[in-house]
Amino acid sequence: MKTFRKILLLVLALLVAGGVGGYFYARQKFEPGVNQLAVTQLPATCAFEWKADTTARPTVAHAQQLVPITVPGCPRTCYLQFDTGAPYTLLYEHPLAALREQYPATRRTLTLRADSVRDFRFALGQGQVQARKLPVLRYGARQLPADSTQPFIIGTLGADVLEGRVLIVDYARRRFTLCERVADSLASRTDFVPLAFTSRRVLLSATLQGEPRQLLFDSGSSAFALLTSQSRWQELSKPAAAVAVRPVNSWGKTLTSYTAPSAMKLGFGPAALPLHTVSYIEGMSWWQSALMRFSGMEGMLGNQPFAEHTVVMDVPGKRFGVVRQ
Image 1 (tube, rainbow, N blue to C red):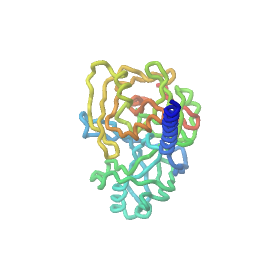
Image 2: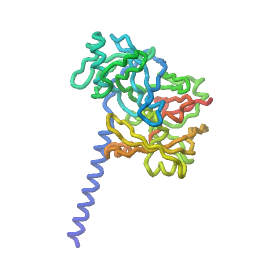
Image 3: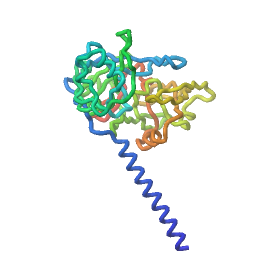
Image 4: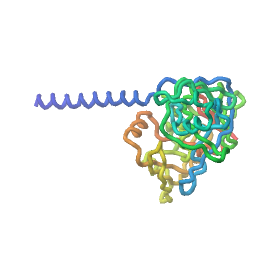
């Protein structure tokens, strides 16, 4: 009996040690590296664009939120997909090669060194961004579009641009403003909820089904209102409602999304915004699911609920707000 107890205690100890070790390993993997961006000359305001997903049926008009930037040596406007779900900014290898070929003056700035670009500068509205070192992902379009008015995407603008700053997004007018503080006149017209910027993720506390929920605001999930687990999706969707099933491209990997109508509302203090739809995705890796669990979030909130509103992400003030109309 004593031997059995010793074996049982040893097994339990190993399980606990493995769980603790796994937890800290996942936390370490979840933590982003040192912020590489230096942002000056704020406030910076620009008009963002929506990129449609024409491969979806029906077409998704607001699949990606694109912000225009100006790159030294390049006469055309380039674009970065704004993605608060990405903790750091990165560039795409194939579009950079196309720019170097078309505009030789960019070769010095856009030359890769060990899968990264060093001392990369770009203008965001009136603001100036200096990146010491940005990773480059083997991704993106290999050729510039023949129509110069079509957005040419060269990378992702991540949540690192928000660190210590305020972002105001007017979805109805497509205005993107990065600044250092919230004006008192705007704050007085805004309903705020708590915001945490843990590991450079925008985690906000909204109410759903009358209960507080911690949600990750992911502007990269533009095509969705709320991405959540399958079990929560079943709770939030309308009974017997038609479900839209479509493939979703996630960094070159095809996943499957399931979207259903929802009658639920998101609460931001006194403000209540209709959710309209709720979705879940099949095909996520074990690692992606583990990261979601370790982040403490209960779902990813996209841009859709705010389509006719203005939102304020006040990172220094630790608050997320919806401007009253």
